[in-house]
Length: 175
Length: 396
Image (cartoon, rainbow over all chains, first blue to last red):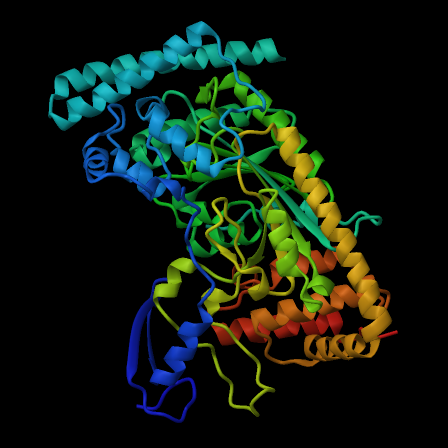
């Protein structure tokens, strides 16, 4: 078969791909394939990651990172170090030291100096209760304790109603 | 899914104020926020994502400070419509490439969008004219204030707003300005400027076409049978578009950019206030725009014939080509924009040139002109569009 690009050489590379749901096949020669690959250089999907973490970490430290997990979302510390992404707000507290040393490498300063956010004590209590009930619900479903899960679901629905009514209240206060 | 007429209307940011330098095209300002009682989206189940979406959209529908909008559930949208929203810069690449239940709320005038369950629970995004970074931030800030009164965001006394990516914690703010810098490019001054700005933690980056997820599946350019050097360079259909992202993975090296288009973005989000970040970016934009103006004068003074030759060729391709690749189209548009700003070409509307940047991309051509998702068909229709716009344009 002749290369579909240069229409001269014999096609030695075959690609099958799915473009918007349709299967498409391509045949081209080694030179055309190489030139295409060169064209892709300088185009990456890499996201900036902190560099200093890989320096001077002992084997023991790496092993610890692989095993230690956030109690709330279950994300292992090793994954956070690798991807610079956390699973929940509580990861910031659970891995405070490690995360702050990563933040040092990524940002110009260690502290937030911008706009602040405040919530009423009642709402904070309501929110943390909701979060812990949701986490409990997850573990109940995992352990197949469906009766307990149903009870928790009702409690969550009730708490969500309370959150909603406090939202409406805040909105009226805002107006 | 049929798009409502409002989604097809001209976005507000494409309108251009007369006194705005030509180099400034678009400002994007995005603030990432998370609700305090849920895990971050990539750890949430679909039920939890649904609860987040319903809570936020319920609040958004009651807000009167922005023009009434509509919520689009991502899963209900066809792929082409999803790409259309990304081309309009209403959603970022993270939304396009993400997984799980997610969606976007878009205001009627397409100046505000709230992405739900992409990287974070909410990403409040405003788009504005190139020179209006401060005003664009003020829109985001005001909406954030209103939402913050009704929703509880994850917030840490010392670290600020908590986000799923450590790159965005603190202010959660990403400021991006899309710039057109042809003269600096022609005089090879971009790498030096990028280096200078990097020391201030500001990133000057190039833009790359297409969806990087597809790069693992190579596809050759469409090569029409023609004299070498004169043939249209037609990219595969999936590379005939430009997306934006929050984490910087889509960026190209400045010297490999398309159509002399660059983005200027803050590198970090923690350690300075929002006002400072806006100020730093504004200063950098001002510096670059001044340098670009000086370079343009230099080009006219010392290389006028070469410049006019390039513009003439660009007008020839834009008005006369029957097949027009995406990269070629952006390059020709860049030279025409430059010539128009220098007064060499008249009768072209700048806001139409801004709109053209979006309309020559694949999903826009598919939706607005009914073209198939095929590199050749898109190039054919793009050439028709350029012909109707530029066939009568002449150098003064």
